[in-house]
Image (cartoon, rainbow, N blue to C red):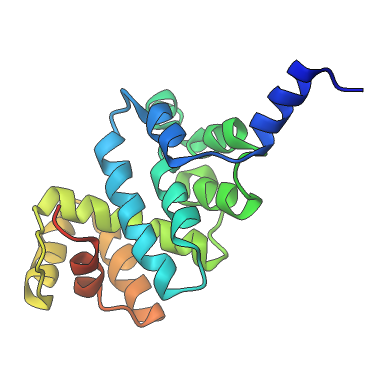
Length: 179
């Protein structure tokens, strides 16, 4: 029989994770602001696919939780987060976190996996190019052109996903609201 303390610890571990807990876990992270933006993008994407905004938002919020700890071991990026959050997030969420960085060796398979890669790269584009809402197609494509000079994968990650999924990227930017 489980003692009261053991039951309490077990219940806490299996009860999932709240947005507040996720924010506390990210405190002090070099990716704090980036992760908040990725979460906002993921919440918008969830409404366009079959996701739940709260669940997809948590995936976006926690996707770089281990970034600072794995900065010099990029093949572990995402894996450490998945280990830390095992039992607290659904397996599909943990898989997306592992698959969001190609250096992890985990291939993106699901829409959630691919959406997180899109959201992560769109956030990088927004941050680096200073994209604001309202955003027009002209502004967005010019920003992609500039960003691709240093990061050629941005075009495939952002434009490729949007084309395959039938998304207007500027609508996604406008739905996340002011940066």
